[in-house]
Image 1 (tube, rainbow, N blue to C red):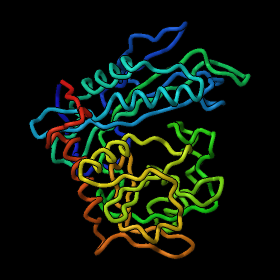
Image 2: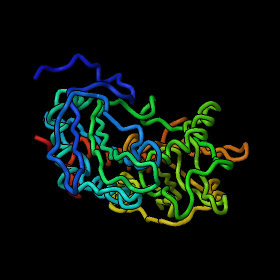
Image 3: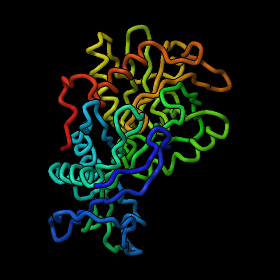
Amino acid sequence: MAGTDIDFATLPFGYMRTDANIRYYFRSGAWSAGELTGEETIPLHMAATCLHYGQEIFEGLKIFGRPDGRIQAFRIDANANRIQRSAAKLLMEPVPTAVFRDAVQRVVKANRRFVPPYGSGASLYVRPFEIGISAEVGVKPSPDYLFLVFVTPVGPYYKTGFTPVKLKVEEVIHRAAPGGVGDIKCGGNYAAGMRATIGAKHEGYGEVLYLDSREDRFIDESGSSNFFAIAGNTFITPKSDSILESITRMSVIRIAEDLGMKIEHRPIDVAEIAAFDEAGCLGTAAAITPVESITRAGKEHVYTRGGKAGPKVTALYKRLLAIQLGETDDPYGWTEIIE
């Protein structure tokens, strides 16, 4: 297959057409075998449950070019498990792990020429999603579903890459509530948070930092990723039923433990932001993003020196990236080669 003339080093984090996506339909109690297609649109009934009642869930994972020229995926099974949890909460048909893995492998192979090479700073972003497609006017689950996976080469989520960003504590808008769907990856969570994120960016911040909706006291997460802080040699991450379980966060916690750090998974009072030594955000799109400062009620708390990330955030980032890129051995079994 012919290569591409893409300048991978200057790619934004955005959509680009590739050769194929893959689609599986759940009808009459069974999933189809999956079909690769170059079509970018979906034929959808105007009364589909995804359009009216929010039966829509998605995932995100990345494929990386290795130094030896091969390509590898990062934690496919963890993403499969998470989309199954999301499906259960919205009463959707769960995508079996075998189907999920088959979809990722087949669509990546079909778009091999779009995988950015090692050293480009880019990756192939994989977006699996599932939607309810049956026509329903009453509020009830769809009997039929579409599971689709597309890919696109992307650059860093933040244009500046591993450069600290400024956060603003959001004290008016809430992202999610206890007992709701804040702990799953559904589109409604992101739609609801846009007004806070866009507003903060207009003020010069990179993202918002949400507080819990019950007391407006404890840190939940940022608008696009999980949050963590470092105090001394302790890695602190918020504990809340309203936070999406980040696969990157789970991975970094394991790395932090192996680097000799103490782990605290607990409610974090927003008043503690004055005591942090370092801070960061965690997610598939951005991996680890260092936090330059957090501003609350007009007061800015800074965690960097000379605009550079602190030593522990930097060490965690380098270790995670080395595993994802195949620069070092993966002792955790998180990566797999896609031939």
